[in-house]
Image 1 (cartoon, rainbow, N blue to C red):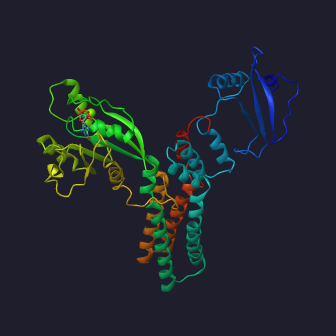
Image 2: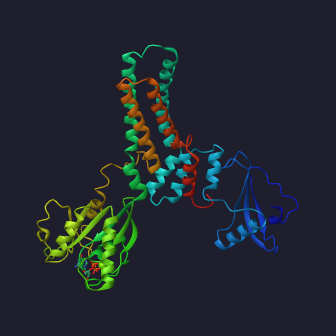
Image 3: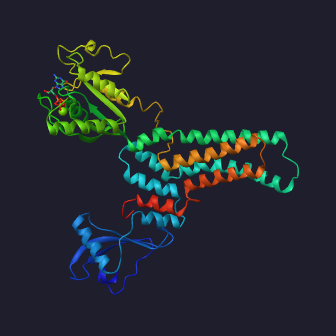
Length: 422
Ligand SMILES: Nc1nc2c(ncn2[C@@H]2O[C@H](COP(=O)(O)OP(=O)(O)OP(=O)(O)O)[C@@H](O)[C@H]2O)c(=O)[nH]1
Ligand SMILES: [Mg+2]
């Protein structure tokens, strides 16, 4: 620090900010006037002594300050290292650490909101009463093993079984929020497909609200799949425009059509675009048969034209059809709602806490399975120590969520997903 600030003495006051000039240790050139904060242990994020530099936000300047620090013997932090240190010093628990990563990665307001709730410790707060209730079952079972020669009375067994059912239900309720939670965090992949010239790229541009894809009246305009992120009602969507499907001798077009097939296979929802001014062609019918294997929605396009008729799509019994015009935007509000409809049956209400992390979901399911198996053993009057084994297993799995019992290799996997310097 003395070399960096060119001062014979530098003794910052604990938990205070001071304005300092930073010099290049080699050339002596002034780099920046910056705020320096000294967080004295344990009053820092990591629980250790920390010096924080708040420089001006130029990337070039920041690189020079980092170079200067490296030259003086510092090293750059590993991905997630600060968060890992905070965890190691008990400043946060594991799912709060994961929430920090989710907060940084969040791309919608709703994802930020959920990550912030988790950072506030809501998941551990919800799990604690379940763990306590589990301990309330374990403790008397343990003592009955030690002190009582006879079997537990029937009434006690029934009561334990009831309490296990209740816990299984509570874990199940929490786990079931993952469907909505994953949607909120990871979003959806949606592909626009159809034969050439029906207006896929026009629909794509209208949903994007920008002229991203080339639109012409020449069939076969789009040659390659094109993806962009959009946001519908705070759900992130990776929308893919694709090459129109037809039999083609053109090599480039044929490769493009192959990519369309791949986009269809990857999609959570396929939007089949049809030209509402024409009756179904054999190409339309073939595509329809293909998309029926997946979640799909039909966009009957060009509703602004005179020849447009819903009956042109006749015979698609029961299929979800939305009449739209990519040209005028007619029907798009209802179309956007229809896009999300297959996914939001499980309501994403503002007030409700959601499991957004696959690791948590998996552990909740496993904890619940262990309780279920304990309940079955209990009902078949198996010896108490086998039942206890299952109950302890469930407790250990719940502990893995908050990090009390998480194995080292899982921890390192989790922190490898952080970005550097967090
Ligand atoms: N009137 C009218 N014309 C439309 C509409 N949507 C698209 N078109 C026209 O239809 C033609 C084809 O549109 P594109 O969006 O390029 O169609 P595409 O399905 O992407 O075609 P390919 O990329 O060749 O597969 C263009 O001339 C568009 O202007 C619409 O809603 N109304
Ligand atoms: Mg196109």
